[in-house]
Image: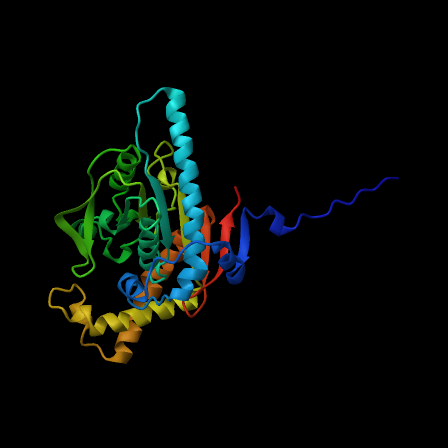
Length: 319
């Protein structure tokens, strides 16, 4: 009797990602030149998100090289499609998303990528927007009892974000995105960032990879993305980074009389730690577990950080 025993597939074979150690990924830099200086990094990094030249060389230069290949291939496909359709010459921006938890370092990653891509040999026009501007104004959040859920999906004007991305992707001129102030903790009335047909647009935000909740016929934000990056770190590191950032803000921005968080400026160190931990666990950690972390599997690339903020592992989605 011919008995065949089916061997269970190796989970690694079923994974949609190829995994790289830091050293393996760093070797993929090839001859990509370093175009940023230490002073550049000082201007680009966010508060409490340390990044070194070595980190740029090991992680971001290989990523810049990969994105250059992806952008060129996508633009070539677009031009071929235009020729097939007999369409007039147009322009379709390449959209890169940067997602992940509060305090994981999305802003630094987005700004470093913008700086690197802007300095490619063909000097593309690269723009950066954050989804913070698409939060509902505080007056609306207060009316709908959502202030303690700021950053959760329901606190965003998802329809406005979709319209913005649709217009940019369609190559429209002078598309406006609202501006958010972290000082006033609110959308700034009447202020906008104007995006005018960039070659590349970077979109940074908590929930950019989240599926739409507005109905099955409504497109996702991710439908407009060409490449997406998810920054991952364990809960303990994220909490510690959030507390450290809160303590530094208590000594700086919170002391500004215009700051929404002025009430926290005079807390003792122990009170500041306890307050930050409460906000983190009650709001940000819950949002992370319920909404942000589940989107990691939708990303094109996952960068996993260690406790020292450095990226220790890279996972690239297989084509």
